[in-house]
Each structure stands twice: as C-alpha cells, then as structure tokens.
Image 1 (tube, rainbow, N blue to C red):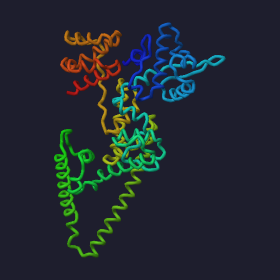
Image 2 (image 1 turned 180 degrees about the horizontal axis):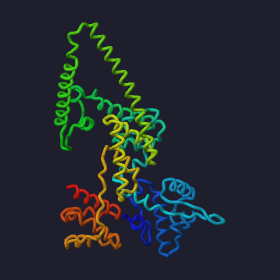
Image 3 (image 1 turned 90 degrees about the horizontal axis):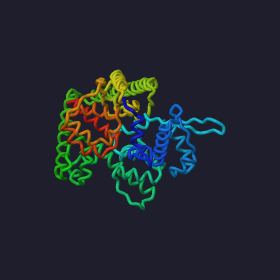
Image 4 (image 1 turned 135 degrees about the horizontal axis):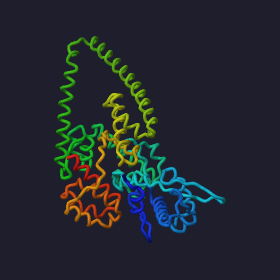
Length: 429
C-alpha cells in the first residue's frame, strides 16, 4: 500500500528549508508549490509535537506571508484554488475564526505519478489542452494574451521575433496552421514538383503526419523518395479501386448511369443522416455512463469517444470503456483513476487486470543488497525500504545495474515510479 503522507514529507520537507519539486512547479506553478511545501513543513513539525487534530492544523495568513514571502492577496487566492483542486481541506473554527488545514497527500502524490515530462506539464499549465495547431482560428487566437501566443509558438516550434505584436503573431500561427492542414490534406505535397521544393523540416512533418517511418539521420533525398513512393502507390491503389467500383456502370447509357448515380447519392445522403443520428444517440448514452461513473465528460473525453465510434460499434465502445475502468479500479497502485482513464481512452489503450502480489518480504541476493545500500539515503525509512526490496526482487540485477546512474539522480517519488516501470517491463517479458 502506498504511504502518500510519508512520500510527501520526504520529498517536500526537510529540516531548515522548504523543498520545491520541479514536477509540482510544472503542474501547479511556483506560488502554489511554495504554499504546499510550507503546509507540509508545518504539518511535519506539528506531527512531531503531537499537535494535530485528526490531521488538521492551524496556520495564519500572516505566518504564511512571513515564512514564504507570498503576498496576502496571493495567499487568499491560493487558498480558494487549492481547495478547489483538492490539494487540501480548509475549515474555520473559534471566535474570532481561525483557519485550519488538512493536506490531501493522496492528491499531491498523484501528480508525481503522471508520466509526462516537465516540459509537457508546464505547457499544459499555461495553455488550453483543446487548442492545437490544427484547430486554431482567428477568433480563438484573438482572445489569447500575447504572452500565451508566444508560448504557443514556442511549443509548436514556430519561429517569431520578440518585437512581433499580437496581430503579427496570430498571422504567423494561422500561416503555420494552414501549412499543416495542407500537408495533412495531402494537397500541398501531392505532386513531384512540390515535394522537391520542400525543405527537410517540412519533409519530416509530412512523413510524420502521413505515418511514413523515417529516422533522424534521413537526409533530404531519402525523405523525398519516401514521400514519392507513398503517393505513387496511393495513386495506383486508388485507380484500381475506382475501376473495380465503376466497372458495372461503364457500358450503361448516359441517362441510366445518371439515374444510378442519383440513386447512389440519395442512399449515401440517407446513410449519412442515419449515421449522424446514430452517433448523437450513442454519444448521449455514453455520456450517461460517465455521469454514472462520476467521471467528468470533458471535451478531451468527448473527442476520445468520437474517435472510438469511428472504428467500433456502440456496444464495443461501451464494453471497452467498462473494461478499462474496472481494471483501473482493481489496481491499488492507481491514484487518480479519472485522469488515467482519460489518458488510456485517448490513446485507445487497454488496462491489464491487476494481479495482487504476495505481501511478504522477499529475500534479496547479495548483489541486490549491495546495490540497495548505495541508495541508503533514499530508503532510510524501514517500511519504505521493505517496499523497495519487494519491488527490486522482481527486477533482474543487470537491469538495476544499468539504471543505477539514472536512479541516483531522482527524488523518492520518481525513484519508486521508475522501479515500478522496470518491474512491470520485466513481468511482461
């Protein structure tokens, strides 16, 4: 069982100073991270003095201002936002009213288990998840601040100058967006001349968007040949299919052929209308499932469902969603089920069924014991050490040896997370 409190205390509090975690800063920002680090340090101090009341402790805004340097206005804002995010619970008691805090260690710990880079998390904090280079519009961009437009350019590797005004940034983004759409629609590169005119960067983008494999060492000529081969094959396939489909009408009179084409078009139109109604009804039914499961039917989840319905029937999608959720619920190591559920269905991944592991302590060989002594500073707590021993018991020593340098640079949360990944990789072999 994961001891969320212990991990948070070890990672974010140490005698003499507050500890700030880079991943936490990426997700919450500096000010909230400082606020959380202060609360955890205060909690640790009062716990040692046995002065907690069911996990709650008292702290004034002036104390927080004094020991963190945060402004009072900022403190008031963080108290509201932090409670909304579920980082801590707040209650007021007494006359005059005093503010008491209770830290949600499970919620904070869940952030450390997110398998994304610090860079990705930082961009997600600043920019809206629903905005991408493919779906931007002028009206959407004009509502965004110039600072966020600059960050959006940086995220999407769009070159810009620091003296660009808002209008120029918007024009630059829309230009790159149209370029990307052209590549995706194939109209920009569906000719030998245009492929030969493209630079290496655009050739790589085109290959990536068309799922054409290439390596980082592929030069301009190799990339051009890959694209030319792709479109030559596509044209042949389309020609063969077209001849096959239209073979039965080729000898019909013009009037009969027009009649056939008209009937065919009516059928297509009718099918489209039926499919549209079918999709809407399916979406409504699946939305009810999310409500029943207490999972927000966010735009991200709606997009995932739409994508699934394009290749699966309603019943198949329902069964898939139910299976993923049930398997996540059965795994005690999963902290934030809704978040991981959304990630899984967005990628179309399945969740394997959790198989409980034996809880008794596993004996380690001398080589693994010696390896673990190197991390004695991290594994100073007895319970934590036992848990780590049980994890590395299932990891080959050679794998541990190869990852020793990488693990030595990690904090306890990331240290344990990487060990779990190594263990799972070994169990799947």
